[in-house]
Length: 196
Length: 261
Image (cartoon, rainbow over all chains, first blue to last red; front, side, top):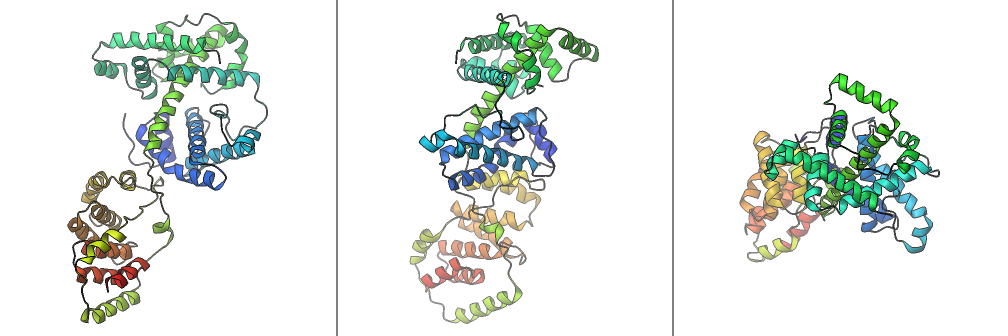
């Protein structure tokens, strides 16, 4: 994986995001955090709130970039987009009755897929079902045993080749392939078994 | 693509009915991976797409695997974000050094020089109190906001992140690499100077900061003179410290001058 040290354009930035390039993601994450923290702190929130809302927005942006749902219009478009999504999420929370009562947020993933250009109308059944399954998969993956978790992360998130993974684990490439498949099966069974 | 919830919707009923999820074969998983990363040959790809169109069960299964893959990636990213968050510097970036455009006009320079000559005549010295004064007043420059934009040099801001976290040694190392390529860059020499001073290398700091003040057009001239003053104060060199505080002529410098007298 080549690291992008000079971000010449938004398009390069988008490609790096699609590759889950950790240097670029980290930089994007760190550089844009304070603006959101300032906004949340100024509007009745805490640093904890800022972090939650920012991470949700970041994941939503990442997902939209992955699915080619975001097309940059200028050289800081993505940064602006991230800010707008986080801001809208925070405004939603401020308006929510539960926040007014308790000032607590327990909304982790249910706002995750709501992109700002979508209307806020009632989610249809299919989408709700999809999100529920996604959440179950994420939860299952979170609790998956670490050998499987590391292998699947290396392959599907860090986009490492099977050969590199096999070298690192000092096993045959074919063994790594089989392991990867077994881990997928295990994860899917875990996700299905969870009844949340 | 995995995000298309509408296409998933059409298969909703089937997903609900589909009970046996173990009917994923290693071949199917790998075919999907090759299809998604574009490494499938054209003939195979067309066949794959044809099956997606004609075989509803196949399509459902594929959408379902994609959901698993999205779940893996999203959760992995979520966990990475937690790690990134720990690296956010505690010191808030203060926008001061970029919002105020500072420059040293020639007249100001002449006045400052005049004052120095005049005061130089009866400069006293304050001796050992210099060290106390230094420790009481030294604060590293808050640094530049690390905003990412097209023209910005990524490596420079990468080091700025280390600097803001107080990891001066790493920042110095990274900036020194850049300095080799751009020895005339006043921003680099300024931050190398301040980082070295913060890292208690007053001599190195003085070398770098002198480079910055040699460029009278630099926006860092006043601040560089201030830190030069601090560096000389640290080295108990009252005369040069005063000289550079005078040149700096900022509120901080003037306060230190008052205290030194």
